[in-house]
Length: 613
Image 1 (cartoon, one colour):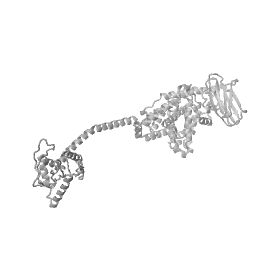
Image 2 (tube, rainbow, N blue to C red):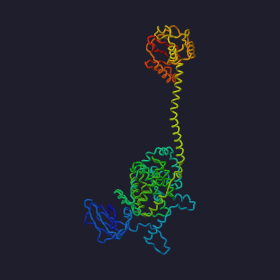
Image 3 (cartoon, rainbow, N blue to C red):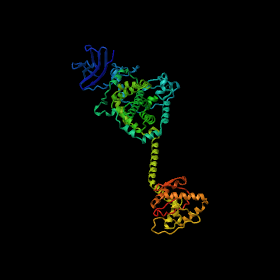
Image 4 (cartoon, rainbow, N blue to C red):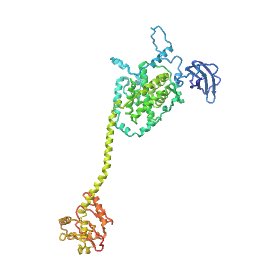
């Protein structure tokens, strides 16, 4: 027999069943309606449902078959008009046979002399769940033997599995972080997890995401699909969540079974579910709702339940574990994303079982398409998908209220986040102060540099351009030049036997005066030079004649030359061959030594002066 694809909906008066039965005969439909039992047969399809409410056959029922689509639609009236049937989207639980909803214990205490019916057991279990205390239950410590400890190494959904990884040694390293899950106690797992998280935490990565948070802000603005559920679509704690055809098909494939869970196991199951959904919400937000090849790794890495087979005792432990892992492993490590994941998880539980189930089905699909992660479906996700369909809506609402009151602070993570942020802020402020000081000090430094350059220019006029100053003195003397200037065209020579003497100049002369001490110093430098041979003197005279023919420097250009020399005065001691161009394009070779050549004024160009430097 083939179980057909089906879907259920309702209005205040009718229950509407849509059953897809392609390639069947329209004359071979059989229906059976009896209270909460519904059976449908059309060869080769057979469907049996246990409904959450009662329906009747009173002549108002209607059936329609679309041959082209192979869709059979049946409208059956409700026994109580206006009754709301809960859990019509929990297809797996609807396929369960009647009476299998309860987790009736195999051994009962009959000493009270009364036998409880199945309905009584269900009611008692529901009352037990409604009065469930979320506080950590404390028990007296009892010493356990080594054999007992080894026998207690369980994991999986509600700690119901053991011995699984003994057969999966090859996939172990790619799936979980714990190396020997079969022989490691819960306390040893937790200690190893905390050490691994502390080792993986990177302060540099955290601070980089903290101060360069443009991409983080974009992720925080993203709105997942569960945030778009309007309050008007929520009835009795259940939101109107629609499932895709693939999700419905997966629900039909699940094997319907019951779970015998005690109070501690149920507590651990709820906390593990919250841990898994926190990791899922973080992954959805960090990828803008589009899963990628890293999605299976991100979900299982951020969940201590999936990665370390962790069992938690309180929801605060779940939050601390998730926060530490979210700031140690993924690409985006920001505390605001941790807070956003908590808000998203709370919203999912507030939307009811259908929203939780849809998220679990999405996780199941992500793991199913990944080679090592599919094992986690068998250990956790599949059982969660089946179990959540049997949970009462009031239980989900109560858990959502507890999540809404929860809070997580940075200091709870024990990663010294506040100290890191404070130190980084101080360093950033110091850098800003230094930068502002440099920006404010730049003009002063520039003026100082200009002042130094001016003084260097003044010194240069007394050293490397001393001959230029001497020529200005010669001009100031009026007609103090000898016949050698007329004979050599401005290329005369200076002799230590007949040095130039300073003459007074008029007050209106624009050329600065050179002190007598400077000229005497120049004379001493000339006298200090070694006596040149006749050939050397002749060579100097010829050089002076050539320079005098090509070089005509005006008063304004003389200042430009001096300014150029002042700018290069700082490099004179390192580079003797630095050249400075005058306005006429002639290159003047600077030298740390004063040029001993005499600069004279030619008669042909009385307004200009020729310089040899």
